[in-house]
Length: 240
Ligand SMILES: [Zn+2]
Image (spheres, rainbow, N blue to C red):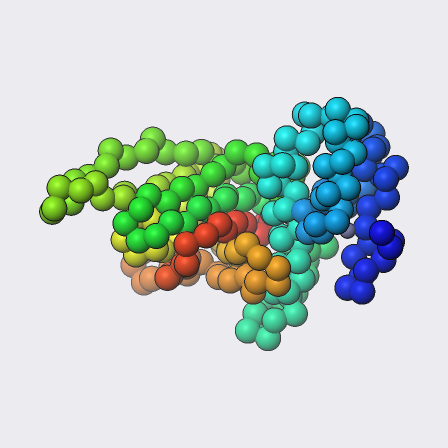
């Protein structure tokens, strides 16, 4: 295996992976290893092989559950969005996000969007690597609503909601018939709500960036992402 690929990705070295699995890398170097495992098949294969040798299970669990993958997606989404002409007005904020928070978010929620009428899901656990350590902001699942019977007697998929603890008060709702994701922000501080970014799975997918807006006479700021294809997404919030 060569150390360097054409796109600038550097494969992780064996010693690095072993140190990582032993938990002895500092946070910055551990993040680099996780990103490589998340974005590169060759690195992932090597890590799987070494993990079997090292017998390290606990740290691997987090990686296997996709945190490393999404860490890589978040980093490249910030790069892509900061360079995208349509998000030019937020270029400085996106660049600051990337640098100041070292590519982490203030909060993150994983979205599993299913077909219209099939219950979608929001996952709030296992995303610690994506959130900056100083953040006080965590989401919690609201009790799943009881399925409602539709006109023909079949169960209708109700939207699923997560709500943030503390301030700002943020509610994320997904699903229902519209294949839509809605972020509602209440109780923001003086700086107003931060940007909300939706990142899809897949290499080089263009993230969607939205500044939550307020209709006249309304209290809450809303960001809507419509007509989402079934699949997995990550919603992240700009550090403020
Ligand atoms: Zn690699």
